[in-house]
Image 1: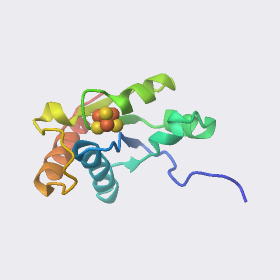
Image 2: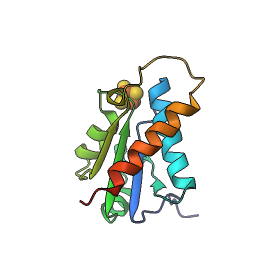
Image 3: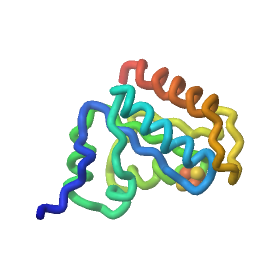
Image 4: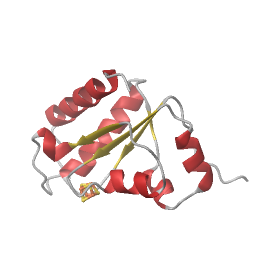
Length: 126
Ligand code: SF4
């Protein structure tokens, strides 16, 4: 069986850091919600970090590449840049005023706010 990733690129691909904090997991949930809303497609950041050639090429074919980091360590941003991808839209959740903690009972209000902020970024012409 061919080893293929199910996250095919489309016009807008979304890479959350999916890190081990509330903000990292908010990033992940925001990417899921944007996918379910039909705004973009969540994509595997780990596949990019692993330098899987087909996944990098697939991501490069997208019109917009969105990185959502939980905090200013910028793991998603740096992983994408290391693979030679150009980020068109960027969110750092702590810079949106949400404090990074180890409380994994995520606030739906925080998730909705970051979804809204990401949509605002995507509404801008690039
Ligand atoms: S950006 Fe911050 S929250 Fe996300 S994986 Fe890196 S250290 Fe963790």
